[in-house]
Image (tube, rainbow, N blue to C red; front, side, top):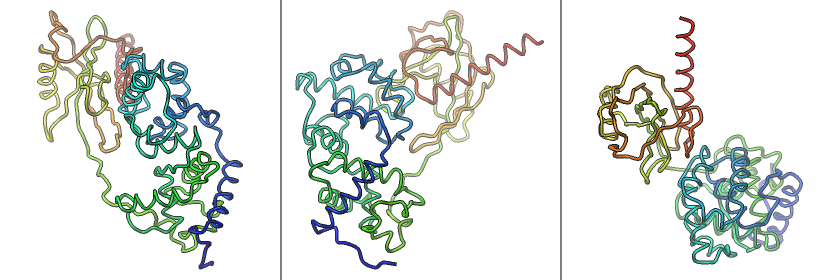
Length: 375
């Protein structure tokens, strides 16, 4: 096994590293819709969608979103609820709100002219250093690094960095190394090549070191410690959450309420829901919560079923109960925005977890109807 490697601190080694990586990228890169354009608006939308979301999940959302909002003017002019509807199912809805807010800021303050430099991109809502660097390097060729989770992992192994990569000092060190490595003539391709390498070869577990185009420069591969890097500390524990929701039927359909403007899934529509305390009786707490939210007593009956959903830092177990809107009840008394929808074809922005709930409700109602017909 080799015990030495070319020093990436020298210009010659950096140049050879870049050539090897870029040759691999141009030969092996995935064909993705946002790679077929240098339009800064389209690249910006793709980068926001790709935050914490897998590429294969993003592609159809990206194409549908651009079909409805093809430019910054159309996005800025849209109602936020319309934007959320087109984002529904992609998750992390704060991204959509900040994208919309930034579009309005660009139109209001820059006459619709998108930034060309990373520093100006980073001044907009929802755009951090990585996203700004990625957009500027890809669309205008600014020679700036872009360090996301994939690049962080590649650099930690390449340089055999054993300090926790989520510590500020180590993060700063990684950005410095990335800035020194970025290709001066093709910074956009180079940054995407590092990301692609991390996504497809230098993976979190079981990295494919034998297939790596830059393994001759990788200190972790040479030392046989690729699987042990990068090091992270202080991972956030996933918190279990138990809640109950009411599937309230009325003459006009199924009742949905709007979540608060801030917090998890802010502004989206859902069944009236309450979080349950440990050991609490679900029906008792749900009934009290419905009275508070809707301003009237809504009788809760039998259980419909249970829906589970995994968020980033919490695991939700949601118990769904049937309920009937009371005769004489007035929706105008509700303390939260509420409306009736057809559960089989609801309009308005719904999160993935809420689509699961409506699917459960529709399936249960279909089963009940079928059973009644048989009897």
